[in-house]
Image 1: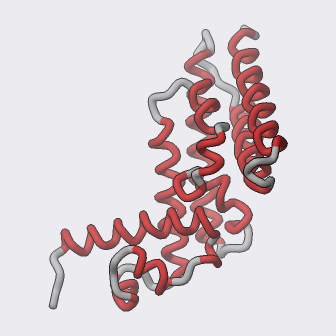
Image 2 (image 1 turned 90 degrees about the vertical axis):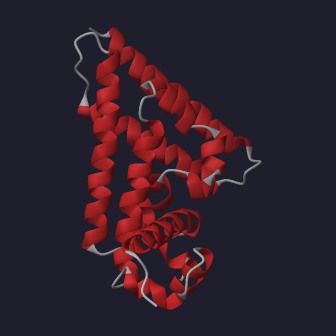
Length: 193
């Protein structure tokens, strides 16, 4: 039985969304194709109607996840983004959280195609932060180096906080300290000129 183009697209989007969430929860190697397809409500064989390999799915779901992060914070002031990003809710919501925080270490061991997707997605996050900082700056100029530093600090804080037991005071302290430091860096940048 053939399916319509619309149904095929709907199935593709369901697979990507399911993969993106599962990969963020358990890493690329922690999810098999059969489990993924079952979770998406589709047959294992249907996977190959959409993807040549798991690696292709990893690259496409990574691109989706990184774009999702941009959409989530679009329209928010950069300080509000830091408050939302460096929050316990984000840290605890692994499957719905930032792909960069969840999968950067896994991506380092992936093929160049996946690394290229990560690089493009991270660059988009940097540019969004840079634009947010510029929007708070009187001259409208943001600093790329500052945006890179803030992103690296925020992602690192989520990664380190997740590595601690959830009820560990250090887990929250990491988020609190980095949130305050990122806020200060953004506010001081806007005051300098």
